[in-house]
Image (cartoon, rainbow, N blue to C red):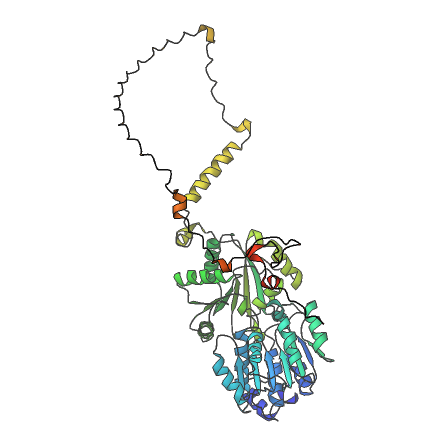
Length: 520
């Protein structure tokens, strides 16, 4: 089957022919007709099978009719990482040259002002990561009520990165009548729940069994020692001895290990660049561009670059660390052997990685063979002296104490026999100790006699009329005039004076002057 039989528009067919493609991949052949019929599609396919073009080409055909409105995109594509979103934009730029559609990219690391300007003018295709998309919605700069088609790409990666709550929220913001395209490489239970909730009678397209690697990839395990310096030595020798190596991606489990390994490879003369989540957007795009155009032959990356990146003609993949999750192994080695090309995938395995290798073999259903013996590393020990951390005084002291403790912990039979102590003579046969003569104490000089104190003169007697000191300093009581003084007497039967209660000055005035009632 050719692209002309899928129902695409002449403009899209001309762009596909100009790109050099004549035959669709299996997922493109099965998914494109259902998308053009406005059906919901659930696509299960491994990376490198062309599923990006499976929704890009029919979207371009459907969007030829209609016009975009301000702040209301017609279609929405959700991607888990910035690199995948930028890659989808490149596909629209490649196949949509004759369509004249407007495309906007909403990702982190770019100013809100430039993105707001594009949204305000109106876009036909909006490609975004979930976090930045919700930021624009919460700021009131974007409306999703006009979305006709929703694409959720790399859904299992969304699950790993914790984007499922954001996906559920976005699906509730778009219209209920939209068309949904859902693509994933694996189908865990959480992804199954999302598809049952937001897809309406979908058509399931599965081109290969989930969690299987392409048959064009040659896989091998390589023995190595567990120390990071020894693993770096093994990796360098493996890269130098690899056949047909054009370019390679080296995967690490941790971002810190990516930075260390990148510096080590550059120090030993390899053209390498790094890619991990702590880098800013400009540095990440510059690293990818230098690797794609062949300026650098080695890309050291974390799992942020493991899924969905379309980097053509990657000949080798090296797993510096065995991935903890078996699914990540499938996506890592899927960077090579794409579009029917041959590829090689080597994984460095230490003694502690046995359980992770067993999980990978159980998932893929194939036994991965070991290749050769680990190369000797004694000759390269001097190369890694600068990379090994030096032990301080405390660590050396701790090693010494540990050795002494281990020596004391040995059984008694293994300890060397001690010489017996000489027997002591009994106390009765010992010579008596000589008596010590008491030391003479120096005589003290007599203290000089103190002179008697002079007698004080007696104080003159005070007169009896003298006012005491407390009375002299006390304030004089204020005397009221006679007319303001109130008598302090109790009432008697023969008393014609005013009524006195006996409280003195504290008697209220209305009690001192009682009101007399007027007689009849």
